[in-house]
Length: 205
Ligand SMILES: C[S@@+](CC[C@H](N)C(=O)[O-])C[C@H]1O[C@@H](n2cnc3c(N)ncnc32)[C@H](O)[C@@H]1O
Image 1 (cartoon, rainbow, N blue to C red):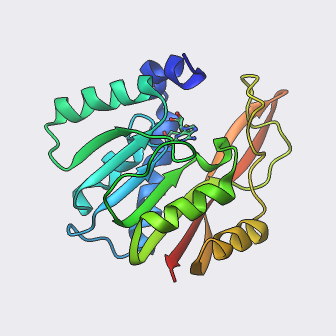
Image 2: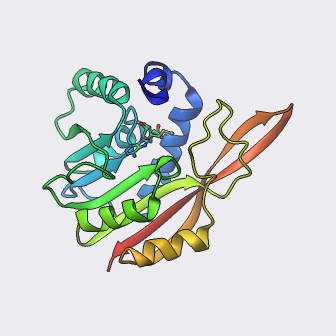
């Protein structure tokens, strides 16, 4: 069982996680022209907070994650809400065969820093997109290692925007744009610390 499997049941009970997904969805909506014809992939969907916040503006959504615990919670939510445009998929693009589908939009929230080889995943995202498809990644700006307070160590400590832009361009994307989508506030050693979350948007060249 992974750390995320264990955390899945309580994930949505944290109002801060729900709020950040809501805000990031709002920023995505303002940044990208979404349509109900768009076939989309959320990679590292967790319990699906971001896709639930976006689903009314999208077509078919594939929600992929490596954690079965997260997907179990997600499947219960999809069933309870009677969603017909949301489908879960257990997928690790680092090792599994990619889905046969191609997507108009791929998005991801706070997942890239958990992926061992982000450069390779960016190439896989590129291959999974339709021509002119859009990539949208929200994740932490470079941080000092204090973000994960639960002892998690096998993560990237956020990303330098310029370096990530190079990786995204090397993977075959163009028109890379960044904005600051959200700020995560955490109390660390009695002081409030702010961790900015960027939104990167790029197009398959
Ligand atoms: C910090 S959580 C974010 C979940 C969700 N995006 C949210 O914002 O609520 C990171 C998610 O990435 C998933 N994950 C970690 N490594 C992954 C990988 N290699 N491929 C796909 N998902 C992964 C975890 O299982 C977890 O659900």
